[in-house]
Image 1 (cartoon, rainbow, N blue to C red):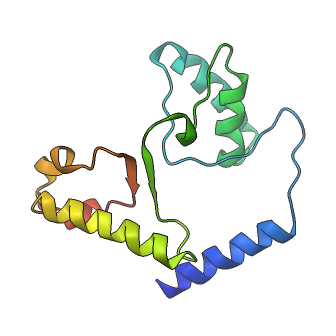
Image 2 (cartoon, one colour):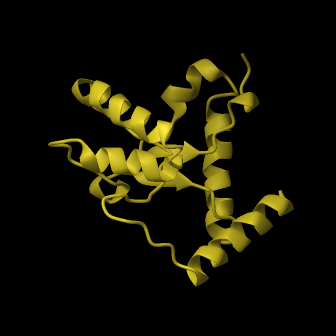
Length: 138
């Protein structure tokens, strides 16, 4: 766990010190959740296959494809009423502990039963990352 915290902290500072520039129309981003409308899935996959053949990094390929799809409206967490359950950045100990408490509460309220996971999921969160499914009984 300490090794992961050190890696995230070093990576955070590396990107704060040296900003990376990408050529238009390539964009950069990351996301734990990407929802593609069924009608656009074939186009999404076709363009993504081209980027894959070019060995384009996934955090460049997916956001770029989303930008290139005609008539696609991009939404972010700020566009919803939901909270983010992201615990990727342990350099904020208060947030890290708060998210761990929410996840522990989910495991507790579902009684560790995977079948009760959705019914016990807090309604105010879009997702909780990471919810370790290995903590639930099969």
